[in-house]
Amino acid sequence: MGNSSHHLHPRWTFLGTGTSAGVPIMACDCAVCRSEDPHDHRLRCSSCLEFTDESGHDRILLFDTSPDLRQQALRHHLMRCDGIFFTHHHVDHLWGLDEVRRFNAVMQEAINIYAEQRTMENIMRVYPHIFRREENANDSFVATLNANLLEVGRAVDLFGLRITPIRLMHGRLPIMGFRIDEAHSHKLHHNLLPLAYCTDVSGIPPETWQQLTGLKTLILDMLRPRHHPTHFNVDQAIQTADSIGAEQTYFIHMTHDIRHADLDAQLPTGMHLAYDGLVLSE
Image (cartoon, rainbow, N blue to C red; front, side):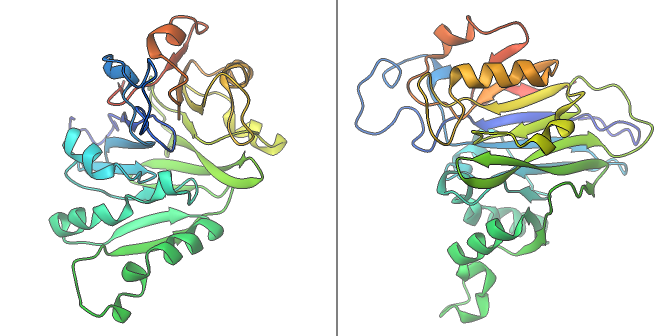
């Protein structure tokens, strides 16, 4: 990445694009789980956004911390973490959080995490050894995190980005997606931004649609061909993406019911299946 104070040079990396069991899943001999196509090998969902701030410093933000985060960070040579935004507290989006302690050690500073009240309460419940460190029997190597509460519609300006939490429904559970824009009024042309990250979606509330206009990039849940009570299936995801009308849409959170080569070739123009390691940039 370059070091211009006038350009963010944003890069979005899909660290994992699989559903909660990953692909291949355990104890399965189906064609996709046996596939030798690397596009069919899906770790659990996390993504990172790399960019250069106004001072010329390289920054990395994580969106969720999957149980595969260590493997993902090693694969993509992630050397720091400047903040973590959580969509919700389910295991496949949270249980890699312990791994970020290594970034604390490298950077010698705390990491800010961002989540809404319900999600933050569950993060603290799962990780008492981090948030109630004084109660640990041994003062061992744990992450140092600063908790920041999010509210739907209240944007966070961070390192030259504006990150706006939006309301999504994951079955009956209200969760967050994120719209990411350049923070300043002198917005430059990006092929990437504005971007919306909408994983684990089964419904979009009416008030959220206005936050999904004018997108260059949409990242959207697409679980499998048949119906599911808490995720968009293939047809629902395509219909929703068509209604939103982003310039490019990338689908994530896929099960072993989706073979990349088969479905990707059938998608409408401007829509794609994401895959682990895919990088979107200017």
